[in-house]
Image 1 (cartoon, rainbow, N blue to C red):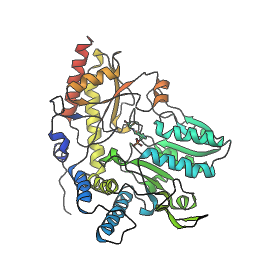
Image 2: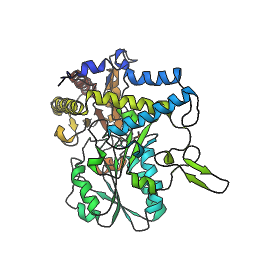
Image 3: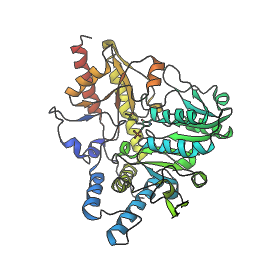
Image 4: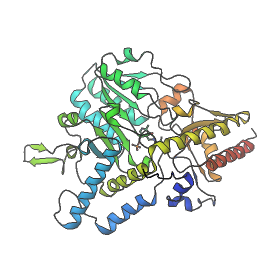
Length: 414
Ligand code: C6P
């Protein structure tokens, strides 16, 4: 057996051109906002460049050489992304992002199947993208929303799950929460949802970048994710759907490419996945998404997970040492249950002020409600600062974060 030497985060960083440049503030970039969007390796940037320079053409239409090459690369990328989550290429629909993928399910499956009085079960920690589409579906159909509660650490309370699942039509749940980084125990939740006869939708926006995901083993019906959080460009995401569901569902958007035959009065539709891809697709970004998952697979999701646990553990230790200066870290304490995200506040300083001071040191964190306003309200937080880690972050990044927080504490006399 050939032993492939594991790469270090420092070596991985060298593949990302953005880290070679100082920030506009003249400091090295300490990028701790990958939960918002990830940085891109050279191979992904090159894939975009090569497409536009060498074979830019529309797909599924032209017979000429570059059009055939574009179609082939586009469908090969679908196959690579499908393999990455262990589904068939025909079960993977390109979307713009996770948000569009969840809306696709809420409109196409939801409008056709949800009736007045049906129950849609969510959790109290969902991102707006896995909440608002279901609120609108409930308003359209007369369905009701229920929520799996969370405890004071932001961990799901599953004691009453069977009662909540009673009469439930859809369960839609984040694989990993974006504000506190909590990893949901899907292996304990999905079988119970199945037993209750619910359709299971997983918001994987923070799942696929960080955890090995096998949709067949999870046994979910739909799994939504975004390319830009996993090294691919913005503007491309994907929806996995079980083949039988995709076949029986009506289309979401309609127009070119999703049809088989069109008459003035009636249309027959293409087979999945193309039935759900109306109009010219985001060809270049989909091709680059295929390159991004190859990069992740090459580094290894197992390595990425272990690396993030190491960094999270180190960050928790170093941030806890700032407790006497008023630093509070929210969420679970065990890196086993956190997907590379830490939310915190420094005394009663507004999170935006903390983030602005960190920025003067080249440290990028997100501050605010993180598109989880109901969670913030439930926890009684106005805003938090959030540091999120990925494969290119190092212990030195955490050290710079900590010294920038010490600077903030000094400025605010904490
Ligand atoms: N969260 C964050 O900073 P889109 O925007 O469609 O690619 O992803 C939406 C989305 C859905 N679910 C979860 C759990 C998410 O974290 C996100 C995106 C980013 O936390 C941007 S708001």
